[in-house]
Image (cartoon, rainbow over all chains, first blue to last red):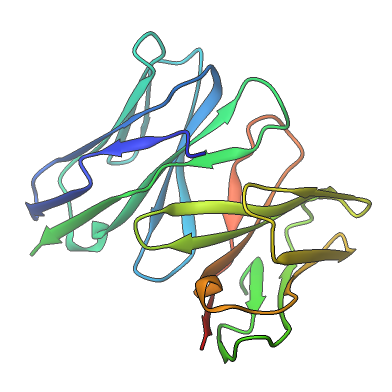
Length: 112
Length: 113
């Protein structure tokens, strides 16, 4: 079953605005990752946050993790048209064989 | 050069045909995965392999089989293709650590008529 659930499902913003999307999960995790997928292409890893971390930055990306609420958010600042893509969160559980469980994805459209 | 390659990129076939999708990687990773993506359902794991002698079923392995021919090669077969196997298929690789950051191929779009 899918571990991550993103919210909102679709987001349309103007270039230069910030985009925020959320992800919730159900069980204890080792880490949570965000991936980007441009239309019909393979997923690209963006950022990983470990369960003992609360916030992480990478360029224009900011990820937060709240393990008490079992949720994460991805913020893209100063969005660009090239940020138009689907964004997926994925979790690695604390037990088992470290498989990734993907959410259903957020579609983000950045209007130039 | 792409680190993870998939062939073919597109394939149209008929119900009942046997199809093989191939994946090769130059990343030197031990772990390889096959996923399928359907609109609105995200990615679902079909099979995964942690090394050449290790093959494991994922969430949706029925109707599929795999072969890990070498560290760098992992192929997915549809034994008798059916229309509901029409989907986008991705191969991915990862290092053998607990973080499991994955690297994806460009995908194969498969249509079963």
